[in-house]
Each structure stands twice: as structure tokens, then as C-alpha cells.
Length: 223
Image 1: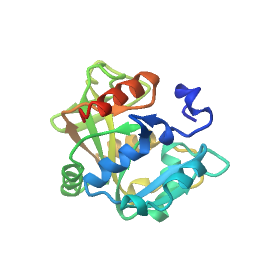
Image 2: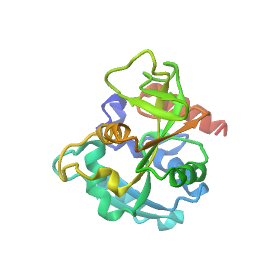
Image 3: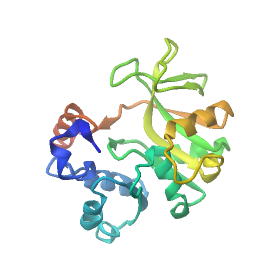
Image 4: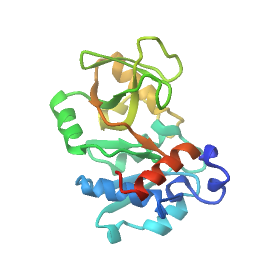
């Protein structure tokens, strides 16, 4: 519902919020295409029809866009992905709809494939700089991931880009509210969540402060 961006998002969904003179999703699309990611599935709910009307099948952008709607009940970040699984391949990237992540996506994907694990989380050494640190990452391994119960050993944060195999969602209910964090915690418990450390910071438009910062950087062509 993008409540933190109100009143901007009272009449438009977050992906269509203007950043540096364009809808935010246009910037995301350009970044993804630059990294060779051209098959995109959008999990949409609130005012999602406006996104479909604006971007259609993605042909004008040189990409292929499909859509998975939550329906009358919001399913959460994990539930939305589970509903979209029939539209996804065996392995796929997951990117939050308010994140702008100027990283090497191919390097992340290659690391995931070499890991042989069911999921991957990118992490950033945060030390409470941009949000509450929620990952204990040691010797290249995610030891604990918990957004609600932080500990002094947590110096990293979930960067916002993940990779998963379909099997990572086995055992979770379909058409139910599921938090993606629950899926990730399940993988950590089974030692099936690879960790990939990113050195450059992330950007987001989840708040007015984040939106203003990204707007300034993109206008200055600093990203």
C-alpha cells in the first residue's frame, strides 16, 4: 500500500512514483535490461492495473513483462511469489519493488548456481547506517536472519536482491499470507541460503527521504 509515501501513493502505486522525471519502474527496467535481465514478472496488488496500462508486455522497452496479481487478499512478499511460481522458471531473481540496486546481477547469479543451494541472499555490511541490521554473516555464511529480533552480532542487512529455486518454497501454503523472511529463515535453518556480500550501498524509495536521495543522484547521473 506504500503508506510511508502518502500522499503521493494515494492515487498511484509505488512503481509509478516519479523519480528524476520518470516513473521509478522505468529506472528499474533500464537497470535490469543493462544487466541482461529481460524476462520480468511483476507481483502486483494495490493499483496494479495502472502499472499494466503503462508498461503492458514490455515490448516498448525490449523486455518481456508478465504480471501476477495478489487478488482480493494481499498475500505478503512470500505469498505473492508463491502465487507467481507458475510464471517463473526453476531459478529466478527476486527484487523488491522499491529498491534500486546498481550491482553486477550476473555475478550474483553465477555465485548462486555454484553454491548449489536453494536460495541466495545478498547482504551489505550496514552497522545500522541505512536501516536496522538484521543478518549475522560470518566467514561467508548467513548464520542468522531476523528482521524482528536483532542481536549485537548482526552487522549486515538484507540488501534486497535474492535468487531462489522453486523448491525453496516447498512446504509453504498456496494462496496464503507468507512473509518472504519466513522462507529465508527456513532456508537458513537447513543451511540452504547462500550469502553474497555486496560492497556498494543500496537505494530505495520506501520513504520520502529515500525517494529524495535517489531523485538527486539520478538527476546528477551519479548512478
